[in-house]
Length: 113
Length: 115
Image (cartoon, each protein chain N blue to C red):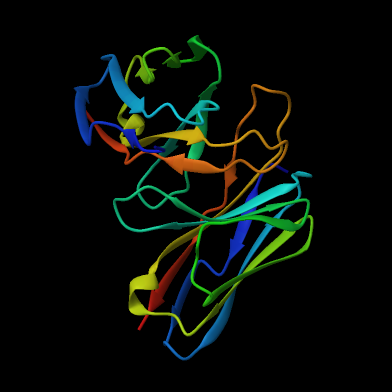
């Protein structure tokens, strides 16, 4: 199984903290990435976890628990510009170059004033 | 230069037309990708090129034909497409830098409409 699951929508207010969860099936797992995509825009890379634990990059953090087949993206101090779709994505192989990726269904985050 | 460029931005074509999408990057990346994205859906991987060789073809119909003429360029040749092929076609590139780097850089995409 290669599928990932995410909530379809999340709503929060400016300044709040929001967590977007992602669960995956364990076979052939080589890491979990997070991408942001604004309407009409290209996906942009946010974070990658290959090992258990928390990765922090400014207001965004990503967490992975391989034993639970679970990860999340944490967005702090939400801003209106964070309204976008957020995708978790898993790598399916460990080629040195060329990453076979499958994206989760995406979570639409709406930030309200 | 950390940019992936794609041309054209928009393309409308009939089912009997032949057209090509182009993608270019000058980051020295040796892996390049084509994705298809329908509205409100995630990107779906179509092809992966690694060192200018096709390494992954995700069972894409033969009416889509990729080409990687050199390490900076990636083309997608289109022929006899169907209306259901209308979508945003995204190009991406990446270069693994150690075990913990997995970033793909995406271009802005080509919005394709097949009439």
